[in-house]
Image 1 (cartoon, rainbow, N blue to C red):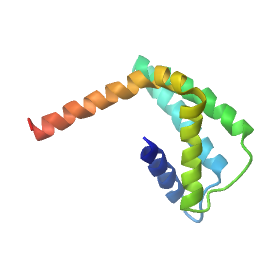
Image 2 (image 1 turned 45 degrees about the horizontal axis):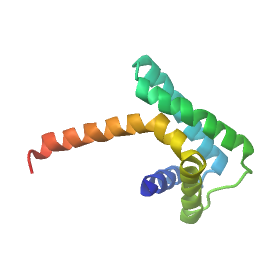
Image 3 (image 1 turned 90 degrees about the horizontal axis):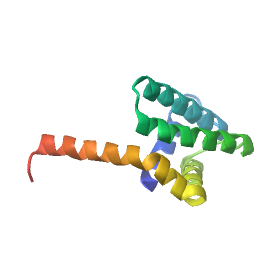
Length: 123
Protein backbone atom coordinates (compact mmCIF):
# COMPACT_ATOMS: atom_id res chain seq x y z
CA UNK A 1 0.00 0.00 0.00
CA UNK A 2 2.87 2.38 0.81
CA UNK A 3 4.33 1.90 -2.64
CA UNK A 4 0.94 2.72 -4.17
CA UNK A 5 0.94 6.15 -2.50
CA UNK A 6 4.53 6.76 -3.56
CA UNK A 7 3.83 5.73 -7.13
CA UNK A 8 0.76 7.96 -7.26
CA UNK A 9 2.66 10.95 -5.91
CA UNK A 10 5.55 10.42 -8.30
CA UNK A 11 3.17 9.99 -11.22
CA UNK A 12 1.39 13.21 -10.32
CA UNK A 13 4.69 14.99 -9.89
CA UNK A 14 5.77 13.77 -13.31
CA UNK A 15 2.66 15.23 -14.93
CA UNK A 16 3.94 18.77 -14.71
CA UNK A 17 4.81 20.22 -18.08
CA UNK A 18 7.31 22.97 -17.33
CA UNK A 19 7.97 22.27 -13.67
CA UNK A 20 6.69 20.31 -10.73
CA UNK A 21 3.35 21.24 -9.17
CA UNK A 22 2.94 22.73 -5.73
CA UNK A 23 1.57 20.41 -3.09
CA UNK A 24 -1.65 22.43 -2.99
CA UNK A 25 -2.09 21.82 -6.73
CA UNK A 26 -1.65 18.08 -6.23
CA UNK A 27 -4.14 18.21 -3.36
CA UNK A 28 -6.62 20.23 -5.41
CA UNK A 29 -6.25 17.80 -8.32
CA UNK A 30 -6.79 14.83 -5.99
CA UNK A 31 -9.80 16.47 -4.35
CA UNK A 32 -11.38 17.21 -7.73
CA UNK A 33 -10.68 13.64 -8.83
CA UNK A 34 -12.29 12.23 -5.66
CA UNK A 35 -15.37 14.43 -6.17
CA UNK A 36 -15.65 13.32 -9.80
CA UNK A 37 -15.27 9.68 -8.77
CA UNK A 38 -18.01 10.20 -6.18
CA UNK A 39 -20.33 11.63 -8.85
CA UNK A 40 -19.63 8.64 -11.11
CA UNK A 41 -20.21 6.23 -8.23
CA UNK A 42 -23.48 8.00 -7.45
CA UNK A 43 -24.66 7.57 -11.05
CA UNK A 44 -23.70 3.90 -10.90
CA UNK A 45 -25.32 3.41 -7.49
CA UNK A 46 -22.01 2.07 -6.12
CA UNK A 47 -22.70 2.14 -2.39
CA UNK A 48 -19.25 0.80 -1.43
CA UNK A 49 -17.40 3.47 -3.39
CA UNK A 50 -19.69 6.25 -2.15
CA UNK A 51 -19.00 5.26 1.43
CA UNK A 52 -15.26 5.52 0.82
CA UNK A 53 -15.31 8.78 -1.16
CA UNK A 54 -17.65 10.42 1.35
CA UNK A 55 -15.12 9.54 4.03
CA UNK A 56 -12.02 10.71 2.13
CA UNK A 57 -13.29 14.01 0.69
CA UNK A 58 -13.81 15.86 3.99
CA UNK A 59 -10.48 14.49 5.31
CA UNK A 60 -8.62 15.88 2.31
CA UNK A 61 -10.54 19.17 2.37
CA UNK A 62 -9.60 19.76 6.02
CA UNK A 63 -5.99 18.81 5.29
CA UNK A 64 -5.78 21.22 2.36
CA UNK A 65 -7.09 24.16 4.37
CA UNK A 66 -4.66 23.42 7.21
CA UNK A 67 -1.59 22.81 5.05
CA UNK A 68 1.06 25.42 4.54
CA UNK A 69 2.00 26.05 0.91
CA UNK A 70 4.94 23.92 -0.22
CA UNK A 71 6.02 22.60 -3.55
CA UNK A 72 7.13 19.28 -4.88
CA UNK A 73 10.61 19.82 -6.24
CA UNK A 74 11.66 16.25 -6.86
CA UNK A 75 11.38 12.63 -5.86
CA UNK A 76 12.04 13.20 -2.15
CA UNK A 77 9.36 15.86 -1.70
CA UNK A 78 6.96 13.74 -3.78
CA UNK A 79 7.76 10.80 -1.51
CA UNK A 80 7.06 12.95 1.55
CA UNK A 81 3.72 14.07 0.14
CA UNK A 82 2.75 10.43 -0.47
CA UNK A 83 3.87 9.62 3.07
CA UNK A 84 1.76 12.49 4.45
CA UNK A 85 -1.31 11.10 2.70
CA UNK A 86 -0.62 7.61 4.02
CA UNK A 87 -0.07 8.86 7.55
CA UNK A 88 -3.23 10.96 7.39
CA UNK A 89 -5.27 7.90 6.50
CA UNK A 90 -3.50 5.22 8.51
CA UNK A 91 -2.27 6.90 11.67
CA UNK A 92 -4.96 9.37 12.52
CA UNK A 93 -8.03 7.34 11.74
CA UNK A 94 -7.05 3.88 10.63
CA UNK A 95 -10.27 2.29 11.86
CA UNK A 96 -12.40 4.90 10.11
CA UNK A 97 -10.57 4.39 6.84
CA UNK A 98 -10.83 0.62 7.06
CA UNK A 99 -14.54 0.77 7.83
CA UNK A 100 -15.27 3.33 5.10
CA UNK A 101 -13.00 2.08 2.31
CA UNK A 102 -12.25 -1.53 3.27
CA UNK A 103 -15.36 -3.00 1.62
CA UNK A 104 -14.64 -1.25 -1.70
CA UNK A 105 -10.96 -2.25 -1.62
CA UNK A 106 -11.81 -5.86 -0.76
CA UNK A 107 -14.36 -5.96 -3.57
CA UNK A 108 -11.77 -4.58 -6.01
CA UNK A 109 -9.15 -7.06 -4.83
CA UNK A 110 -11.58 -9.97 -5.26
CA UNK A 111 -12.39 -8.80 -8.80
CA UNK A 112 -8.70 -8.59 -9.70
CA UNK A 113 -8.13 -12.08 -8.35
CA UNK A 114 -11.04 -13.43 -10.43
CA UNK A 115 -9.74 -11.57 -13.46
CA UNK A 116 -6.24 -12.99 -12.95
CA UNK A 117 -7.61 -16.49 -12.49
CA UNK A 118 -9.63 -16.12 -15.68
CA UNK A 119 -6.59 -15.02 -17.65
CA UNK A 120 -4.04 -17.39 -16.13
CA UNK A 121 -6.36 -20.31 -15.52
CA UNK A 122 -5.76 -22.75 -12.70
CA UNK A 123 -2.24 -22.68 -11.35
